[in-house]
Image 1 (cartoon, each protein chain N blue to C red):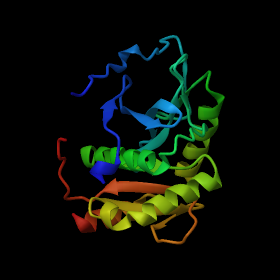
Image 2 (cartoon, rainbow over the protein chains, first blue to last red; image 1 turned 30 degrees about the horizontal axis):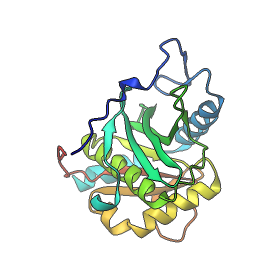
Image 3 (tube, each protein chain N blue to C red; image 1 turned 180 degrees about the vertical axis):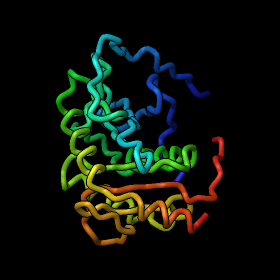
Length: 61
Length: 156
């Protein structure tokens, strides 16, 4: 028999502040590791030209 | 893939999923998080995963669990990403390892399951600012996935 797992027991502090890097991307202020990764991800995403992929996806639909 | 993965559950936060790794070091709670990284020109979610600290509830993405189930954990994360892609077919999922070694690990996992992944998702490699179709034996800076256009969401 499977045990039902309730993840609400994992503590989440509602006072943790989110810092936004653009309109949508964020990290928790108290998490320097996540800050570094999110900044790297956003920087990479900003460089990428998605228009070619959009055109390619239109062709496949 | 199904028999080689852990059962996963929705997390407390939106777009987060959790599962337990079982191994010699015990039961370790893992979390997979999708956070929007970009909305203009394309909707891109940044995926990250790591161990949940039992005391703080925070996710540690740099930890090496050493629980002798690396492949099973990676396959579970891959399955979560593929489900996410199917659930949100217009979105891209961006994955970048925290180190070159981790990127190579992800690359090897993708390569070993490429045929299976490509039945449901398009997968790209990122080299600098270029997006290219994923090829085996190429070292990428990051990866991008998207559901194939005509794949419908299978509620499982």
